[in-house]
Amino acid sequence: MGILLAGFDPQYIIRQSRNNDENLQALAQFFTISQEQAQGLLNKPHLFDD
Image (cartoon, rainbow, N blue to C red; front, side, top):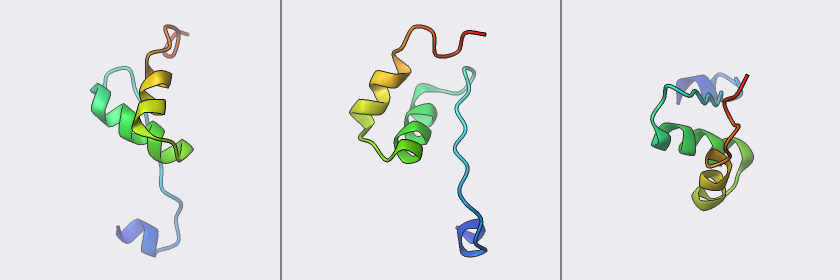
């Protein structure tokens, strides 16, 4: 919370190595979408392809 009070924008990080719940929260918050919509993004087959 302190970083937000300091005026910095929040950072949202998704990683293939993170658990699904952490990535779900980051996507939902970043795009300001529902968790169901974020789950749809996480289900994309090539999300973490190089």
